[in-house]
Length: 189
Image 1: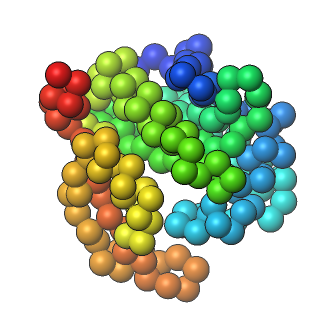
Image 2: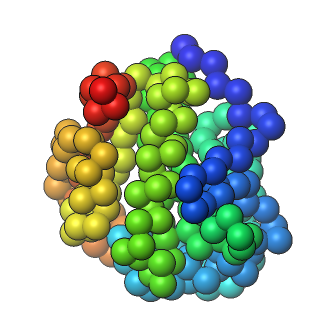
């Protein structure tokens, strides 16, 4: 079993971005994309109807962090503390040295290279600091942008589960991608 130290909360920087802890003061920012139908199109979670819905989500993220079961960063530009998206390890499996990433971005910020910067950073943290053996991602099969960013970062499709869960009255497919640490290290060399 790997040991991961998530305290204090790790603040990450890229060329343009700051990945930081999300707290209750960020409710309005997070609500702007968790209530946005375009942003939530491929997220199989209820769309936020109120800021209280978002506050519940933020508290859930904090709880996962405190229990070292996951960690979520708010994505913002360095010069502005407004959160425009989230990225993180939505599930940390210490026993199997594996982390599952999840991410979303407000549609106003799509196609600007933001998610690429953020995903490269947390993949590096996952392998170099958390010492994961592998990283996975679960996506909706129609989410081409998500598929493309995973492929760009050397993830490979490991599975396509047909109608494997029921959400909003529909049986939905999921596609699982994975990246092994040895493949990541080969990409660096």
